[in-house]
Image 1: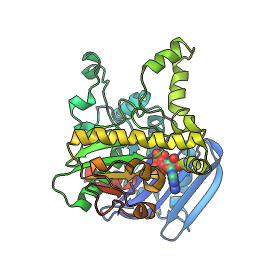
Image 2: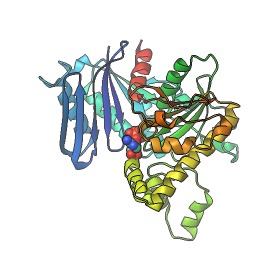
Image 3: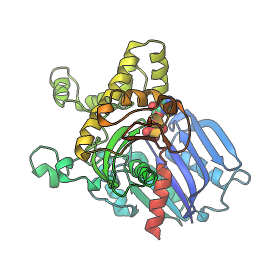
Image 4: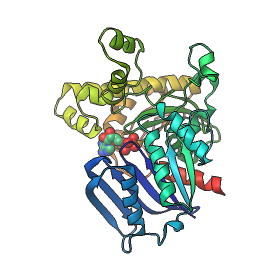
Length: 394
Ligand code: ADP
């Protein structure tokens, strides 16, 4: 069965065509900078690697380009759009309406639309991807896999905020959690690798968005993002943890309105606010040259992660492994080293040579004396979505 996985963000669409159940990757690609005249389309099969820069103004145009490539006489991999039997979509916020992968109906789309207020950077793009895919692949089953679903096992003591009770059940104000597909994928890989029946794992997903999950026996029991994807770690453009008193001060004393506050904390803060850059590669290069803001921002970033490790060791009452994943977690030996420095009380001891090694495979970077395994596991949200969509339709 051919499953097309679409992971559409605010300005990008990642896609993979995967044959299930063999998990064979037929093609993959990415459209970046949607909305710009210099949008980039990348596409790869076993025999073809193609890249093009052109004006792509909308998700619809982006997906149209992808479909053209899939059907292309030379570069293509399918003969007709009906060769795609299932389209699996990543959807960031499913609130507490969805604890499982779901076939998309009008009602499901309505809910995704409703939750857009809670994930404004993501849900609108996810919904756009669904609407366009329905148009291009009318014969295919459309399936939604929610980032929030993996976190439905977080107990009440951890997902409830200490505000009046009526806001919890009646208004749905609680911790939902995100990046669930990624945390689930890498923790399942780690559990298989460690061969443990019972396991205590902390998964650290560091991309543009960053989050950590405490995972006991394969189940999420606590997580650093909350009601929206803004809590916890320092991210590319998001502040993470912040005293909410700052918001009242911005509004009451500094004359900000709510939209400006939201924009400040969501789009202008985090590593961007601290350094002027949001790509970690640029920040590392500047830090290397001695830029103090960049050095401090890297230190602050790692310190926040260390604090969450401490909290989650308490939550788990132990620790077998920590996992680094996503763009920064998989690639930045600098951040990994800062995080693992002075953590020997927790049994975390890094092998610096192994930390510098590069690989696309799961690898262990702890020293021989480390009690805790330190794993780098490339995430593959698209494969996890294909697996879940396949399970659902079968
Ligand atoms: P998204 O959350 O959008 O899926 P990714 O998981 O692709 O993001 O991660 C993007 C981040 O990964 C960016 O901040 C980028 O700088 C960082 N990154 C990618 N490659 C490297 C690298 N070699 N060294 C350091 N950071 C990297």
